[in-house]
Length: 414
Image (cartoon, rainbow, N blue to C red):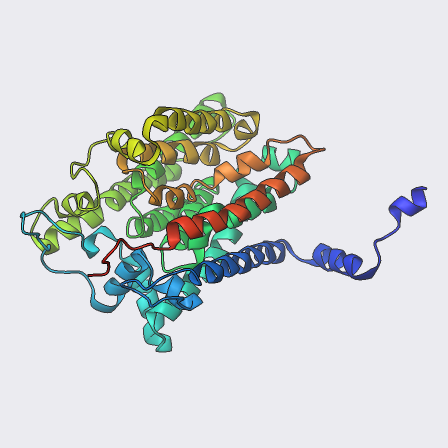
């Protein structure tokens, strides 16, 4: 019986298993990511067959058209091809209208550089660049879990790859292959956290500055730095770590970089347009209530989406997040990974108006995937992770059909 159990698997399945075992860590990451993106591509192609004509595409658009110019990708294309307006557009009511200043420049300018080098059009280059950046992000996330959560990885050696799997198939991970900034933001956030774990503070400062021109997440990242500094200070007081003068200088430089990261783009927006609060006014153009007030939008937005069930839905979501954050799996993470998700999600709750974009924004809280993958016991870990991954992959169909597919109102486009 033992010989039968220990006998190697033969046939095609055995060949695949042996080939998988020979792959280096980065090879397994790229295979998992590529498989997830192929599935998402199939989902998008299928949903595109049900897409009617829009301002951006005709009916039944091609894969590249559907990923390259739909929704906010058209704003990024406008930035790449024409830059930003020198003045804010105003409506008949005198209020600022939706305009390109709401979107950060690093991704469209990066794609613009590739367009110039290759002579390729936006709708071809942008999805390809985003997909490749997503691959880089998965490699960095894998490495971050290895060095940033050693206790968790010791308890679950497959945790880094499980994290990559769950992030790669997250319902809104479809945007990792569209003309959106999520891929670049994932690279910079994971890279910043990895540099912080490795105590390469000046490298992190550069990444945080780049992040300030990609997404408005400087505040939660700065708070993670505070957590890291507090942990190092406490350990130095206990004699288990040495906080050198160079470390203090580096952490001070990080504080400056985080401040610049958070203020630079709104300041540039105000300077170019001549309107000091141009960025806030532009953000307000996308809101049901133009006033940008912390936490307030959740009340009316939740009522719009869920009606009388709004309090129940919000309570369930909040309870789930809290349960994950305080779980044993979460406590096994290092302080940087442990703190990023709750700080980032709390920041989102304070500053955004909840809508369809919230599912995309949640993708950047990727350590929640690490926590989820670490919850089951060793006996059930693999089947549970695979079941969660399959459920997320299935939900991609719902996300793409309900949120990516545009159903124009009657008489639209005008």
